[in-house]
Each structure stands twice: as structure tokens, then as C-alpha cells.
Image (cartoon, rainbow, N blue to C red; front, side, top):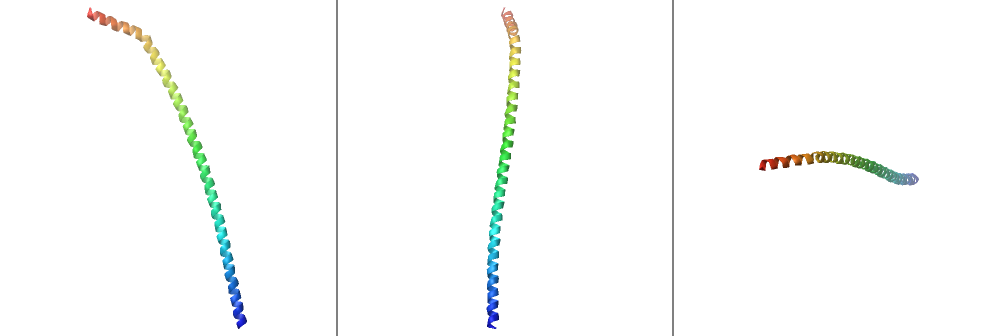
Length: 105
């Protein structure tokens, strides 16, 4: 009977040791997979940041190009208006002065 009890204790002890080893393996695997997931998340976040930064820079570049285009167009319009004004300035001033002098006379 004593041998049977010793055998049961031995089996129980082995079972407890196996359980601890399995728990350790599970914890090691869990830590490994958590580290893998964290590394993957970090990589995905970095990729997303890079893509977002590129998209942002592309938008800024496009906006700057549009700004330059609009600025050039506005400058051309200003030059056209100035040229038209210069074309009519002399005759307009002559007409205004003639009318002023004829009113005074």
C-alpha cells in the first residue's frame, strides 16, 4: 500500500512538474507572440505614418503649384489692366482737364 501511495505521489509530482513546464512554455509563447504583435503594430504604424507624410507632402506640393499658377495668372491680369489704364490715361486726363478749364472759363 505504501508503494502505491509513493507511486501516486510520484505521479502527482510529475504531473505538477509537467503542468509548471507547460505553463512556462505557454507564458513564453504568449510573450513571444505579444512581442511579434507589438513589432508588427509598430511596423504598420510606421508605414502608415510614412504614407500619410508622403500624401501630405504631395498635397502641399500640389497646393504650392496651384498657388504659383494663380499668382502668375493674377500678375498677368494686373499687367493687362495696367496697360489698358496707361492706354486711356492720357486721353482721359486731357478730357478731364479740358472739361475743367471749359467750366471755369
